[in-house]
Amino acid sequence: MVDIKKLDVYRGTELIGQLFDEPEIRFVYAQSILENRGKSISPTLSFLQKEYIDLPVESFFENLLPEAGIQELLKLKN
Image (cartoon, rainbow, N blue to C red; front, side, top):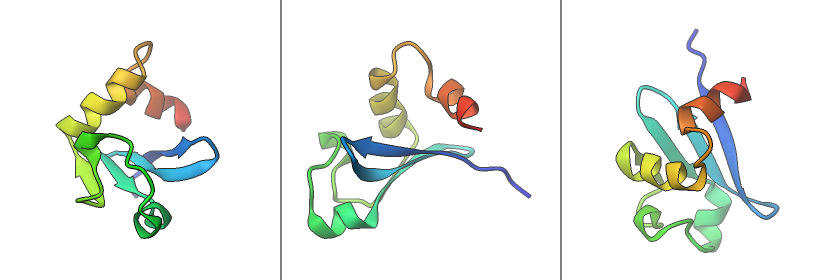
């Protein structure tokens, strides 16, 4: 059984999506955000796609978490 690590991503109290640590880091917008066409979290992670992988995701989240890398934060989740 594969243990997939994930973090829920919120803007205030609203669930925006989930960040997954798989072979490649991946961000998936929550369906409710896509249906309501809320505000995307970044111009590089727009609503043109529901799911983003690798460099755009890592670049965006690394800039939000300067003290700890994404991989380290996901390790702490489990």
